Length: 95
Image 1 (tube, helix red, strand yellow):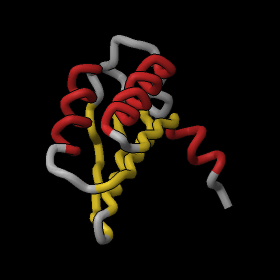
Image 2 (cartoon, rainbow, N blue to C red):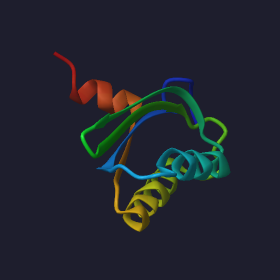
Image 3 (cartoon, rainbow, N blue to C red):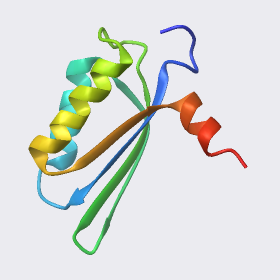
């Protein structure tokens, strides 16, 4: 990754709550070399939501491949997982 900012991403997860969601997702992230910098999760009735700021500086794979693997994991789990570079996210959500 080029610099500290470009090595960060925003990852969101949404789906029906069940046992093992966090363990499976964070395990995959560890396998990919992704460091979680900040994490928030909540349950609204039976809906699980999680948002993370992560550091991709230790990832051996390019961002697009990391994103695709997380999206595929979400499909396998019946969840929606989205990953976006932090700088792009901030640009898109500026006021």
